[in-house]
Image (cartoon, rainbow, N blue to C red; front, side, top):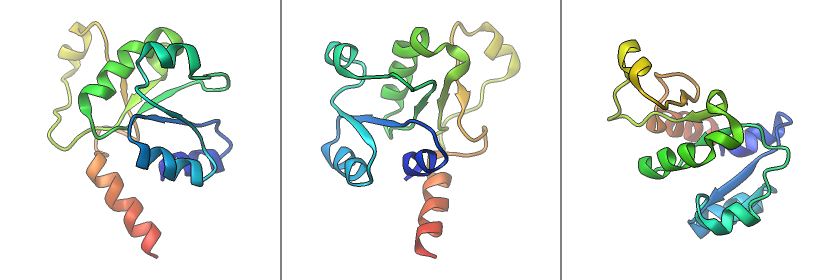
Length: 127
């Protein structure tokens, strides 16, 4: 799990998701968690972001990632928002990027997709 690796490197991590299985797995790994929709009014009041300086949007739900980035861009600032690229997602050209009102940065670079990262992690865990 990426969150566990980040915690092991000394980062404060919170896993926020509306899938209980994912949250239970994170809790069993000793991570701080928030069970629920991370962009809800409830999260605005109960999701403790103290010590958290960046948003890594890594859900399998592309729309949720985008909405989370938009929701938290004022909290973290646009330069501290990251997302994993999906295999079917095209990288914007520099021209398109400049015309966009909002863009996050690619987590681990534009060539690392969700599928590629999952494959790399599963190979590492099987060794």
